[in-house]
Length: 554
Image 1 (cartoon, rainbow, N blue to C red):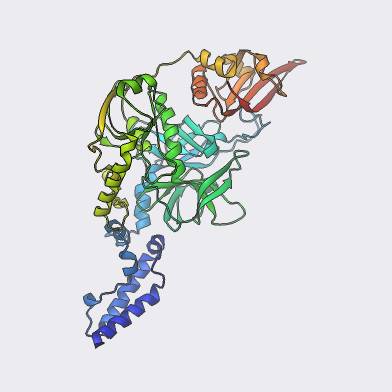
Image 2: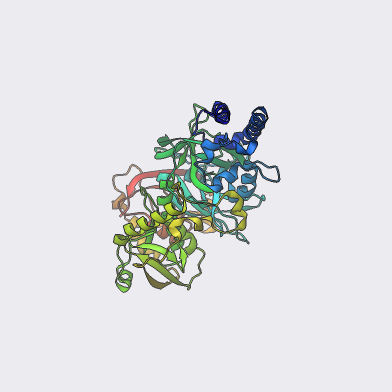
């Protein structure tokens, strides 16, 4: 062994002294990059001086070799010092904070027997504000948050990064997964977050969250995915246990609920849902599998508020890729276009579609009456297509990771999902195209749906009834008539003149709204109802809340 080889071996041993674990997490490097880069440079300079025959640029082993060898160029960009001198997290925050919102409103107690959710409190009763977080999913004002935040709020309000507040309409709720989709009306298009299309999340992956812990708005925290497939109780929704959750060591506190978990490329990889109260640095988030299954369901309902869609698009809960598959196709539409359940949508109006979420987000940007062109692939041809795309991806990126755009590119305003190689060939040989028109929603007579599902007839509240019932908001419907035999056996049964105040977590404000809620509840799903009653005795009015739980609608 010559002298130069001995010197190189010494330099390698010194480098290994500083980096014993060659699988150091990227989050660790981001946190320590300033110190380690300076230390690495010092060591390199020291070695180049001490071993005169070895120049700085001839050292073949870098202290970052164990990390950089497994990184793509975009990974290395994260560790590259920025000309401005700002850290990666500082730049990340500047580019991502506007996609996060503060969810608030008058706090109410959603538990049974509590009347403050519906009836006005006495004048001296202090009102508290709920504290929650959400993120913008679509530029037109669609926001994702936790269902328990909506459940505890009388009228949800969304505060944007610039401080403007807007009342929010509840578009859809998935109470069993603690998710809610809200909509605000804004005069301009907003900056929206995108959901990570790659389903592969691993223990040790880095995560960054921005939220409002204890109403401290827009607080940034970071950590790693500590574990997967955890379970947790959601205390604000009685009896709800969520499973398949991600666990993190990032500082999470009340008020972070509903906030996004970003990966290092600015994509949503989870959603804060709970914190373990008896410990520190143990919090849980909704996983990508649940996000890619539940978001399309909620977005479909939001779309159905505008248009008659002859099919539904769904993703795969447990799959290597989250495709956009057509299901629940109306027979006439299926026959007209020779469709089959499971046909995969590859493109909408020529724009690649990588999953069901992306399909609905593109759809929500369309207008009523617009002609749509769908590029489809049969389910039996999908496996070959996936194999072809997988081989193409491997040839582009030998590390096997999807090449994605780093946060520094997000200001360009383009969707980084176009870098996903699964989208690079949206027109394989076996694909075909069909055309359809976005027709406005046809409103079925709501009384027919309500009678069929609840065996009752309802009408809107009058101004005098709102005053007589001492109601806090203009929601609820008066029960004009009902089939009392259907409710026989309940401890407390609805009566004529009562108010139907809530179905599950939603408060109907018109017969049309109630019919739309019922249309999205399957026949085999048990529902919870809240009934309000006003009784007068000795010229004194009393108000009662009646909860009917686990009732099976027709």
